[in-house]
Amino acid sequence: MSTMPDFTLSPEDLAAFHRNGYAGPFTLYEPDEIKKSWGRTRLELLDRSAAAYSDDAAVSAATNISNYDRHLDHAFLAEHITRPEIVHRVASVLGPDVLCWRTEFFPKHPGDEGTDWHQADTFANASGTPQIQWPGGSDFGGTITVWCAFTEASAEMGCLQFIPGTHRTMFYDETKRMHYAPDQNTSVEKDGVRRGFFGYDYRELQIDPDWKPDESQAVSMEMRAGQFIMFWSTLMHASHPHQGLTRDMRMGFAARYVPTSVEIYPGTDEIEEYGGRVSLDRYGAVLVSGADKYGHNRIATRTTRDHPFVTQSPAGV
Image (cartoon, rainbow, N blue to C red; front, side, top):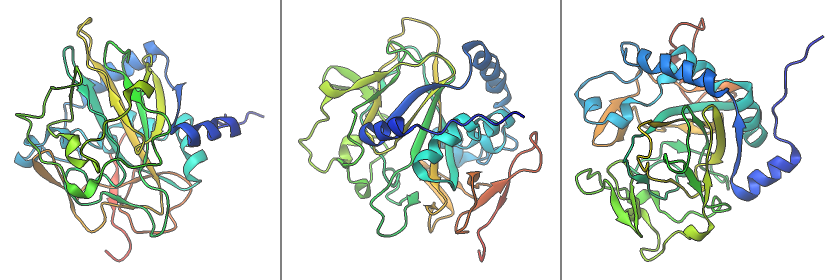
């Protein structure tokens, strides 16, 4: 009698995760497998007819929002976020009842700047309004991000960087709200490195304006295609510039997870970022483990593997 593999973090790995703020890399796909799957998916994603955020003017002005949550309309990405290799490890930290509340793509083309150092707790940094809210009185916050390399992610191609152990102290005040100015916040040289943050300057949120992250403690998280790493969004993280030594793009796919007790987009029916707004009418979080005992979030379900998700509003809404 065969049993399903268990990918739960070992006690040692779990202790290391709590100490460092990240775990991995872990192998999810073999390089040839993800090359084929991503090559096909990349073309299929051009069809946005069932995407959660349609191609209206607001989305066109906010291209970073438009690449959110394509797992809601694409079968490969929908399966990806529910893979036991991911879900078991995430549930090791968050508990048995887990939602995937957002996915997004992070491309880095040859010559692109690195992503600036940052942390995210409530994800209010762009709009000033929390996008996730943990239960009152909780000493936890943020989300677990599972960042999967859909292509090779070497230091030369712009892999992630972490500063271990920084996930329990916030160096930024997300209530300050950043100002979107892509004409001046793209590819800014900071201490000799070209860095940006998608048209924002994350330094606007610093609690201490004179503080700088200790880059001497940074580690580079190189991954081969098909590997993933999981980390707290409150962990200080960044990425290297793509040095352009190869013509290949680096592509990362990030899925974000929280317990079902967390409220997602509380008190709002739209996302405001990157100079645009999109409606949440077609949005829903996906239950990837356990049960939703709270009922305060929109939940997306699907009837078959090949069909998009259908969103259900919370009870009483």
